[in-house]
Length: 586
Image (cartoon, rainbow, N blue to C red; front, side, top):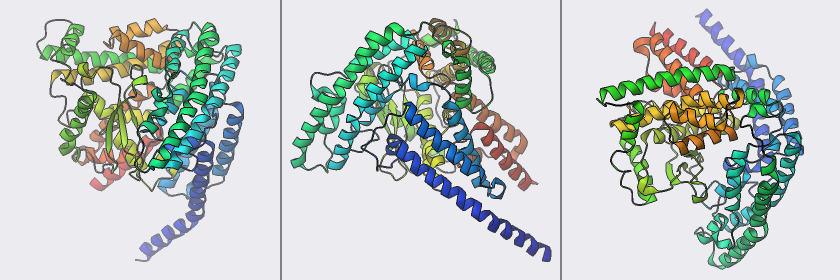
């Protein structure tokens, strides 16, 4: 009894000692989030903090980078004053994640990403349109909401002029985009230049007013938005389009890879580490991709043989793709409903694989028409307070020819991004920077891992869907080959397209869009397969280690319950969990 009481006293003493450091840590995180929201008001809006909804700072300028660097250095210094050893397990994890994030962000500031403020894939010219269409993350419920958005959107003129200035600096320094991407940007920018303000995507909120906007205010707001489009947005887009066409295109680089830029090899290696949250080099990832492509193609060959198909793998894939109709959808709405139907089908089995599920609902929407031809399917997080659902965006060019892909829904919707991101956002035990943050290798790794659960969820029951899932995994593996191929090994855009066509069996247009994505955001596509492989490795390790004590639902719970983590921190956390389960078994 005495020994037990002494043990309790020691625990209490440790707890009391830890309190000052834990309180200091949480206070640090709270003040950091406040300062970050002020510095990044668009991000604050996206995350549900609406205090800065009328602001649109230019976040790529040197002056902005100096403010950001000062903020990061200050909080990294403050973190070092907290005694990590006196924190509890969850606070130590938060300490480590914050330190990882801050150091990575500081390292990223070494590179001149400001010289490339927009591509055909990323940039405020696209983000603003998605936010301002009336059904994105910017709220349009009250008169004040409409007025705040008008002030924010008017700031795009300054953003566009700043982008031109910094792109000219990039032209002088040799930090420019490849010609193939610039050619895609020109019609994209010109698409926002309209003669009639009512035709603009930015006019949608006043074509479809929120119910709470009084009738007496609507005419005034229409006039406000007409002026916004005519006097601010259209001229800004026109200036950008003219600059890109007349000045930037002639200066665009011929080489396609990041390695051709000044300091590009070091820059790309950083982007790889940032995406994969690990230490793999571009060459190691390239070789990993080659082995994974060979393995997955072997599985596909076996599937073809089981089906009794006489012909090549390419012929079999073409046969499946040319199979009965595109689902018989007559409208975009019918096609989107086809995706929602998957959620209902898998619902009875989800409880066998997950301990907790998010409260936030999932919606399925079509990508805006202006981006449908170039945008991939993607997920936009909801808000934990229930005021905004999670949204799975699907590009639809022609609904009558479209086919629902089960693996895509598992990745972007349930149990992929929607489960991972919303369970994290709904977890009030986590500090705000963890609830709202993320890591590509974790988030996209989980999305790809979720695709592998299709058979457990009663999907992939026909050859088309089963092969589609393998094809999706195959082209994620091929990314490991092509991305470093282009950026570290001197491959051309055409070589990358040809590899994806021949080895990943993608159509020419899809292969082109994929390669141009890798060219626009180097390294980002690597996190999918690297993260998925790590999750599969850990699951297999614990299944062998724990035997009958291994529970797949509990494994998923442990992966998701603390939000996104760098892969080495995730592995350390799960190893500790497995040891505790093994100890209980003894």
